[in-house]
Image (tube, rainbow, N blue to C red; front, side):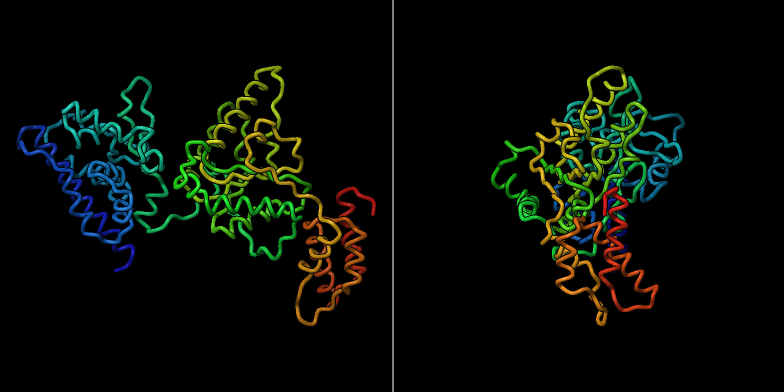
Length: 450
């Protein structure tokens, strides 16, 4: 049986259980049958120990029958769109609305969508004390909310909060249906792109002091669960880890973030600040909220490149715009402090970052321009190693490394230029003259005298 078939079979069993709960609750409500629905019957399905993603998740989370019922209630319209309408048509023959059932109609999806009222009706009927008890399933302290698994959409102003639509997290929906959580694509709802590299630790050349601090970040990733839970430090430490990478352009800040992700098996997402920052009041906070909610409880590294635009120093309040800009910075500070993962901010100048952020960073890592010895390593690592290709001698490279101050990114640009020149000339040689011409081009770009 394929994974898709296993997942479909399990979901179908849970839907059959939910349909029976639905029918039994309606019969009980209309006194056709005094028998109460038993949410505990779902445990027969769970105990069958099928290895579908849904059943495996339920067992791992040790979910109660009532929690499972709410989960299936939120899942149903996504896998069987006519599920609720078919049940309503079969079991509510009289005309008119049935407000106890709750639920709403979507804007594009015209079928029935369950609400918090729907869940409480199925689980508690009209028994007020049980309704009070089961309403905790939608509190911010429940693991549904903590894991971004299930939540209630905001109700209309003045209407009961439980009338909000029951929603299920997109990632969990993918997991239960497709068997895996795919990486999100960059969009207005998720203003970040997945980035990766084929380079490894061997290709990274950093100052020894920088390397030591990078090792600290990797140690947090490896041992943060032990630190927070086994050693019970979560009482004293805030969740997550925040680091500032600062230094001149081209010194390896982005590559270092990618290597950290590669070494620790974590995806790195670079935040597109042009999609985050908005001139409209409230939009920047909304965009960031969506980003952090999606990243919650994920083993992702969030990388804010050129972070000055978003995390810059607050200004003195001269007008409403300044006041709002300062509110944005305060909001960012709060969201980053509460995020449970690794957040890396990169800036060319540490002095551009607001002091309130810097005080809250666990580490501030400086990426200095490479020394002559480090530049020599970069030249050796970056020049192609094709068999038969003639390269400048060790002495020539040492001389170039000592004489010309250039960053790692600049060296990559120079080597690209030299390789293209050699290929265009049908030559198997990269010469010192080509390298110097490439360096001169880089100096001109930066406005430096060659």
